[in-house]
Length: 115
Image (cartoon, rainbow, N blue to C red):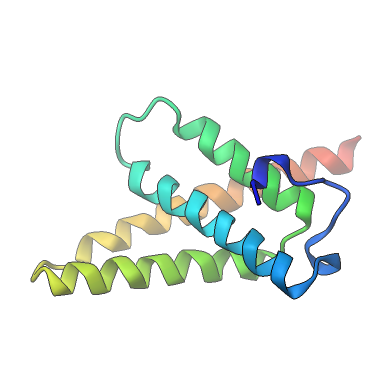
């Protein structure tokens, strides 16, 4: 299931469990790429963030679900770094990514209320 082509009239809560899982996996994959690219000079990062925010907004994904995705990915990265014998201290910086995503989402909600 491609998040970008998701029908915006189908809210997350109306999806079947299988559709919800597939949708969340796609969101998680998109968010993983955002995390990986966040502190780089990737010119497509803004586009990736916008795509992610629009998918979350259109599907009416609850904010705690976004936080859960973030925490799961950070935990996965932390485990990988520990396996490699490296410090996971730098992962604290990725709180900025979550704040940025939530700020974009809040702005989208704010604009939708003004219409």
